[in-house]
Length: 383
Image (cartoon, rainbow, N blue to C red; front, side, top):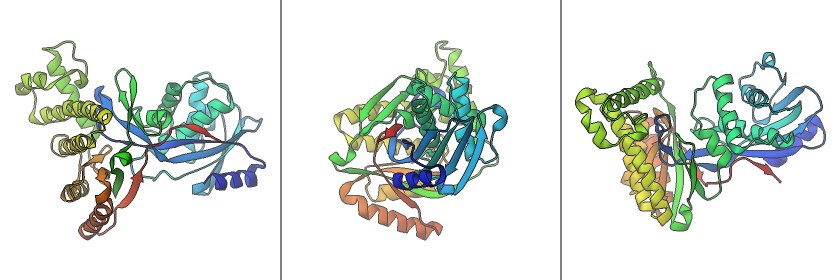
């Protein structure tokens, strides 16, 4: 891919530039915990967006999206926002850097990537992070990695219409080969935890259902509102509780008669999921991947039964994992479609992938996509 990018850059702009890359991500466990101030456990993957960039001495940015066979030119003021949706990610990064006081000029760039689109691996965060990291380096801006992640998040908010948390950009920028990152979404403190399943006889693989169910209402907003209502009820007894992160099951049970059954189940899932993230981190330090797998199954059960964000296709794939005695499996992402993430013993891997894909195709009439996962480095300069 880097050779293809370099060739296209030379053909379009002449000479060569500097290569930068940033990764897509997975989240092993910790779903719908971020907006409740809880923990997530993501890692960067060995799929990335790679860009060759070079200052051009003008006030204009010229960008070629190689995979789309598309190109655009834009200036660096707010009025210069390009029409092309894909270019909003690059334009937004430029604008957010300038809002932070970063002095950047025009530049030329060609980018391409191998982060699967629509699989929940955050190709958009990888794109934002590659350009944020690259511009920070090219123009010697001195922005730290937290600042780069926030620039990507602000780009989503202000130029792409997605009110996302910071996990995707954080993982894309802070990723480290052979490690997952436990991020405290309240304090923004983070720690690395060793993740090398292959040395323990396991493989990590995504099975992508390739479906996304559109719902008439906003399930994300309704679930967030459920969590907020529970916090309000608990706070009347325990004023120190500001987020569900601060609550435990004893506190939740004390207010059970004051809240709806649906709100109770939503909160029960979130409280349990935060505990599971911490248990997985402890297990990883011991190299105990069987416990990791059990927590993944419990996570899926909670997402299916209490948070109700799964769907028939994801439950079917999770059921296939159970039938093949896979160590762990759960839906990954916001829900209602997308992937399951599966922790599979090496000796079962081929049979599981082939059998699950065949059974899914027989049931739903199309094949799931298969993405083996290797945890890799995040944003970086490519030498």
